[in-house]
Length: 290
Image 1: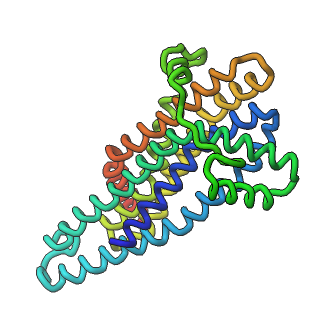
Image 2 (image 1 turned 90 degrees about the vertical axis):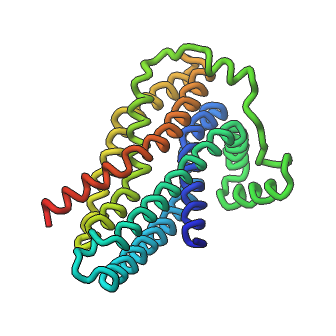
């Protein structure tokens, strides 16, 4: 249970940082140092990458234990029945399904927290960019951030809640660009959220070739990346450049960032729907090539 809780917390961190990713562009526009903002956010993204390197093996080992224990019980209880069709194995699959859905809920939790922290992050990250401009040292900026976190409200880190006026403009102003890219973002994020988990579940459905099933999940992950790179990021980049040149108001970029974050949130919920069908599809593909 402790291992599952750790994976849940790591998933929250990963999705929180992913939700804040696009906000870094607004901080770059606001400070006039867009390239610096994108570069410095790479430091923040290292935290998500580190969490991801811990999450995957922890989750994979948890699934491996469940499969091995269920297979052993199947041989003892129903020795003449195919392992994956035995009652102990089916019960283990049901429990695994619930555990993996809990991890997806962790993605939803992290995304929601990220949405709440967007105003605080933009302000704090803008302060970090300005501090880097003065010191020229990433290490010194990190130390300043850590010192500021020990003294809330002072230094670089500032905690802010979204103002009602800003929310009103975001929610009740019509977007000047087509909203179709939000649907592509929803699909992309739902695929990205579900891909590894679906691969692990597919491996449990077809344990004889579970390593193959897990690797097949990269197809889903790469599809989500392609959708994001081709259908979502160019739209955000175009609006960001327009705001940086003064051709569009900053409020339009805020609106897009908010709706993209909300689309991420819906994407994590939609991944609960597609998680099992994707796993079954990966199982079928694995059988075809094995």
